[in-house]
Image 1 (cartoon, one colour):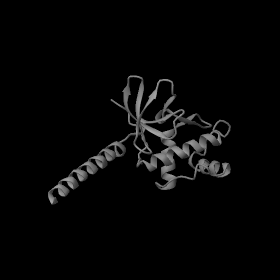
Image 2 (tube, one colour; image 1 turned 180 degrees about the horizontal axis):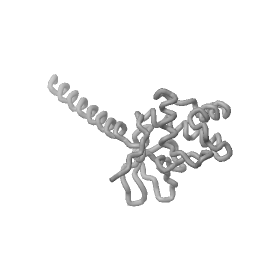
Image 3 (cartoon, one colour; image 1 turned 90 degrees about the vertical axis):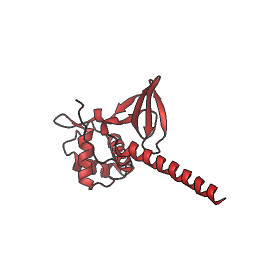
Image 4 (cartoon, helix red, strand yellow; image 1 turned 120 degrees about the vertical axis):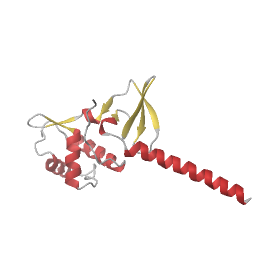
Length: 162
């Protein structure tokens, strides 16, 4: 009887260790260029693989994998930029500035007042185009930044492939 309990406990420990190890490998080593926003699906996702009918993605919130079909609009965060008076600033640079400004903590609540969001965003990107960058865009960027922090990301640089 004692042997069965010990063996069963060992199996549970191994399974838990494997699960935690897979979560660590999935989220600690993700790169900014792998992060996707998908229309019609809440939250952010990490690209896993190309599937037969779309792309296989993994939710940053709960780790569940799903298929994003070809009908869904998939946007890589590395390809998004913020309009400024002088041109555009890549979202990776905006998030890096946000990380530096907040000291690695979460930014303001995305549901904060429009005035607070505008003031916070002006501290991060002072030259943002006030006519083309709307409060809804700021809310989305702040929510994305907080979601990435929650998933353990602190490096927002985009590495070029050789």
